[in-house]
Length: 288
Image (cartoon, rainbow, N blue to C red; front, side, top):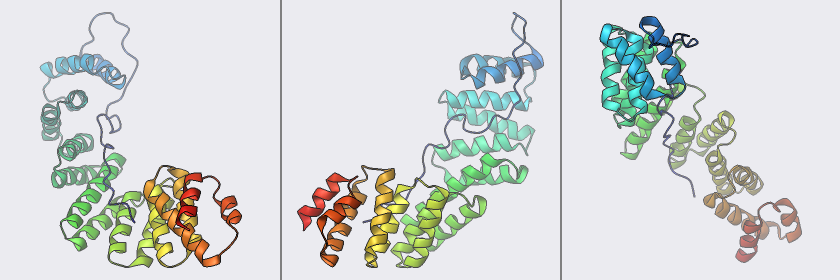
């Protein structure tokens, strides 16, 4: 049995993009700061998650200069953090109108589109951000996520080849994005191209050493090939990472049963090898 496709959720939460504005110590004045001081202080308040206070200062700055890009972005981030995505999007969109190549504003637009389920629009926003500033890592990371989600959507709709293409595009953007490798592995397994699938799972595990699902699926391939020791080693690794992974537990029990049937060895040998998983050991004997 194999876990399903992974759809990464939650990475693009409020404030996930690195700070776009510089931060300095708050002014020593007791009165409400103005001008550049107000903007710097607002950035500090925002960095401390004091979004309501920061929002007030950003609004004050924008009342005097509605084209201040840093204030527009800061206000948008505060609104986004307060679960007001449409108002936040208005701020980011206005910032892009003033500065069409502002990677930070474009990336935040993409975040909101992604959260609303508009994956194509999100991808376009991230691609514009990358074009504006190829060094802006957040845009590349989020673009890889969206392209992978698009690939999964296409695959589930029956467009397997298009889905594979999106996964490959995701890896062109971010060659270290493990879920894209994992999802490619799932697709190739379903296409019965097990050598390719195994390579994909191995790359996923290499990029994310605690990727339990990847180890579980590697175990499935080895088990189906009759390579029981390799399968059990993969399930062992999977359950070390995620002890309550029910699919891996069941697969481990099946592999142990097959191994016991194959070698007819002393049960104590298996007990020594898998003493960390007593519930699986009990299930193993129940199946014999």
